[in-house]
Length: 493
Ligand code: NDP
Image 1 (spheres, rainbow, N blue to C red):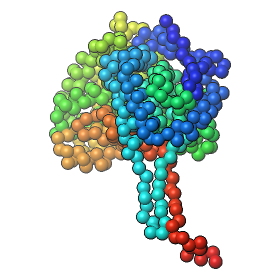
Image 2: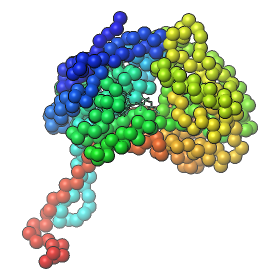
Image 3: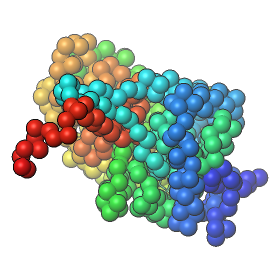
Image 4: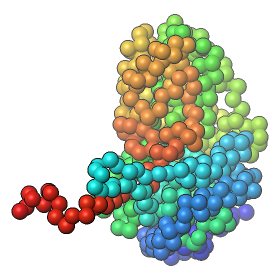
């Protein structure tokens, strides 16, 4: 049955002004599972107006009051654990094993974290002189626009929403058109947890329409964006007219470096995890593997053997670990890169085709795919594929490994696998990326900052650093001299 959804504006559930809708498709079988309003800039204006109206009231609440709403939201999310997990699996294809055990609990934990950590935010007292007082205070920005991607439809919005809400901003959220349902549900749960009307508004519609209208809206102080680098560039251009603050979490092409002294079995476990988790639809997924020539054959054989065992199929089954990719055109794009890799001379070691079983036939599946003998000059070793495709290349020296890892326009993350942590630290310092893991890949915590450099964007999500992203630091100066004429006025006299 196709469920009809509405958008959330100022605490009301409404249709788009035109009454037009968009379909949401289950990528596991191609079924239409929902219809959401296809909003346009007129709807967006209403959402910004509602957020603007709610802003003074929300900003004037104490941090403790706002934290309580987030804590309650964390509990409400867990009360709807299974429902949210099923919704995300249905709209995105992510296995229920993952959405139940990873996405939903992490969303709840994230709100809990922000509820706690924001209460110890402080300003500063600056040592400028005994005859004055100079202090800084952190103020909310006002209305913020949050534009999120489809690869972790719930978690990506929660990362931003928690930080933006707790610091006193009101939000207009534009979820991905491919998978907007969990975000709409989170809007409902935020209201249930006590967020006043207008604090969280969720508006669905095409990025090039409502997304661009949000970026250009003069009453929106900041855009928190996660998505493709090309979209990020477009947003930078559009935001320049209103000199809007931006947070850009963009693409990645992440290196996985296996040094000659690495624990090969641990590296193989990490490689399979980081290449194929969420079908490789992870900004930080490892997709370029550089393995020292002394371990190359062993690593390749073991990685292929392990990847062969991954169970793909119906994502609603708890035993499935690999679901479909998110939509048909995305599957086609991944297949195009696979074809390109074959033509470029990379050696296909695993996968490379559509799985053809009863459970996968009607969905948008790509089998876990591994190429060997890859070169950095091959297009698929440079472009973000965002699918379950790994390319492996041997290297001879550490200098070469670092150069290969840095040979990318992206700078999101990388990992180094070695028993020599002192040398690993030195290499971490040489790799240009927002995160470098030693003997791990693809792990983030609420407490650790997340964000890239180069064309992976700027700004941080997570950790206390994101609180800075959603506040303005104001300097307040108080004259305590008691003198009507200050010595420096002499410069004008
Ligand atoms: P897109 O950039 O295509 O879309 C992201 C969001 O932007 C969607 O809500 C989309 O709306 C909207 N959008 C699209 N065009 C515009 C526009 N012109 N103006 C304003 N908004 C727009 O990315 P994907 O959803 O395909 O997500 C995958 C990308 O996200 C990958 O590159 C991945 O690396 C990156 N990502 C980065 C992360 C990080 O932390 N660095 C984390 C997760 C993902 P609509 O859906 O309607 O098109």
